[in-house]
Length: 124
Image (tube, rainbow, N blue to C red; front, side, top):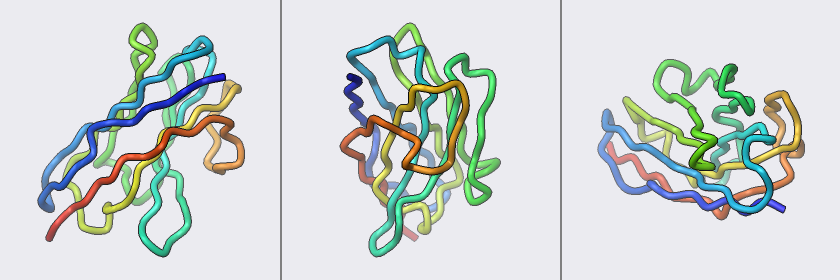
């Protein structure tokens, strides 16, 4: 079992930045590929970014490419999502997720463990 806890959400003006963190406990963190997803009100949960266990490969949704950066520190059991040039349409609850596998998957059903989510609100 893996427990995930997100932090770092909040209210920010358009054009600003936030860094989300997701800290894992339980089984060895480095075995897992990690992903960030988000869900805006009235919309389906969508993939934002993913990273393999080594940190050597990342994938981003087109909507955040060039603005968001995912990274991980296996020694701290933590994955990060640095968000820059935020837009009002980035407003959502952001979730981190873990999957036992080597590859990044964009489908949420591929992920076995989920955090409780952290709210990000971007004002215009």
